[in-house]
Amino acid sequence: MTGTPSEPAQAAASGDATAQKAFRTPIGTHDLAPPESDRWVALMGAFIGLADRAGFGYLQTPIFEDIGVFARIGEGTDVVGKEMYEFFDRSDRHLALRPECTASVCRAFAQHRPTTPWKIWYQGPFFRYEAPQAGRYRQFHQIGAETLGTDDADADVEIIALAADFFAALGLAQVPLVLNSMGDADTRAAYGEALSVYLQRRVGDVDSEDRDKIERHPLRILDSKREATAAVAAEAPQITDFLSPTTAAHFERVREGLDALGVSHEVDPKLVRGLDYYTRTTFEFRAASLDAAQDTICGGGRYNGLVEALGGPPTPGIGFALGIERLLLACDAEGVFEVPTQRAEVWVVDIAGGAAARDLTHDLRSVGIRADRAFDDRSMRAQMRAADRSGAEIALIVGPDEAGAGTVTVRPLRRPDGGSTDEPQRTVARTDLLGTLRTVFDALNAAAGDTDGSHSSGLD
Ligand code: HAM
Image (cartoon, rainbow, N blue to C red; front, side, top):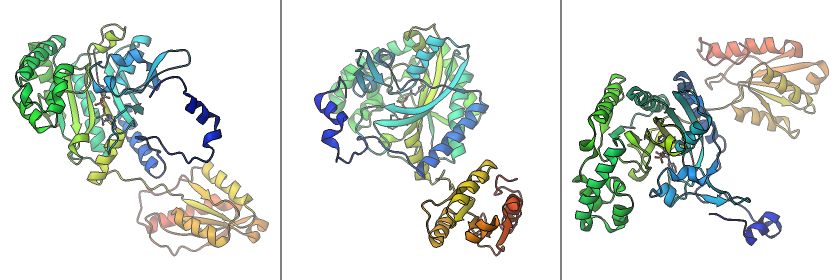
């Protein structure tokens, strides 16, 4: 996990010993390639639209930070205590790959002191040394949003509604929202005390695998999935009984706001999150379609003391992060947000040396048409097969005759809805090509019954 380069590492870097080795992605990591990556791009686009309309700007922080930034997540948490990728750089700085972004966002706030409210969103890779399985990886990807500088309960509502709207935009219907309040620092301390006393009394009933948590992180007992522990947790004191009147009113206002916006939710006093910085509102969206061990697709809450803990002025904050991989597993399970079809609109078939394909694809792309071609001087048959596979509506064919005469043969292949077409092929001067393409696209769209032009090319 860490350290200065070892001898084997240096040998590997030199390449000698490993010249023939077929490398694979490290355990718990994945390559992302088309067509699945098209889905990620579409997903990001959907989120950016919503975040932008709600006034959130994009923040990018480093992939690694001084390890002290993440220590504030909580030394007793799994994320910091067991799963962090930490290392010393060549100048002996103690650094860590970011396991999450909220601490980095607060570090950035403390460093730059932007005007508040500071509403930002982020996305990117995060790293935790976990046991990999479906929905749990060592490098995973989050999208998140945070609002810093206000304790207004309506900011909580805005953040939660942003996540809910995003899931709705993807077509997800089975992602219930669970809500809790962790209270203020005093509440947490008083509750922690009461919980510890209770758990000490019931230690014998707690599953042996969970017992170390009683000392290390008693709150985590509450969300244990082990049967014996869950039975003990069911009878434990509830944090909602420890809330001060101000915090209880704040929580009530959040709930009212969610009701007003039609964001249905359930309160679960046992909802504790795996990170120590939470105060007041905490929440999770859990996918009913996923295995309970990995069903949390999105988690978040308030962290009113975190900026200060990182050397900034006292600054409240609220936010969420969602796991993209888990979110897409939930989409698969519900059969929504499928891979978008990315197809060429025009395919250039060039059997006269390739210069026309080179030039025409470039010209067509510059006027907004998705145009593509085959390489390597393939036969007419092979190029027509490629055109067909691409799903393009129109093939432009340039053979020796067309190349000599400065013409192009425009051959309609299919309608935009995939249906067949009897639209005739025609040979036109290169100078008339764009006009002809417009006519043929219009005819294909009309035949497909697309009167609103939603399938039309960039020519319109
Ligand atoms: P978190 O609950 O640790 O919260 O992670 C948020 C989401 O990231 C999880 O709900 C899950 O979907 C995804 N995730 C976490 N670990 C993994 C993993 N090993 N593999 C795949 N997906 C994973 C946070 O990170 C907080 N920073 C959220 C937050 C933002 N709180 C306030 N603002």
